[in-house]
Length: 170
Image (cartoon, rainbow, N blue to C red):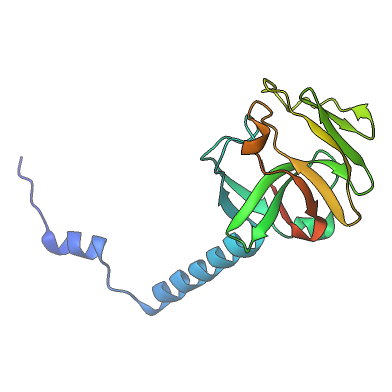
């Protein structure tokens, strides 16, 4: 058995001579991909453990930046909160709306004086304590799902509704 090696065929396979239609297709695919991942489904990396086990540190997720304009946020929604541009965002869960009072006692969340059942919270090993506070108009109250982390390692609190820029897909 004789095996021949065609260098010209390999070169043509790895680096084909670009044709006019090929370059158009590449340009169209590049523009569509850019618009898709910039406007429709924006990728983001989870950095930190404050939303565990719902979202793990290092997970790639996609969020829908146009959805908050169609559906206003509500209690229980996981949202992307813009901190500085589109580069620095928080991934948090809404636990209270404008006009509600929020408090943490013994690691449990109380909204309007009633203890809130939170089935998504699995890690509840520390004693969170936070005095009662009211959520101002035009704001929501957000917090991470991982209550096993000390409070001082969490970014949480009221967030302006206009800073909510999307909902993660999963």
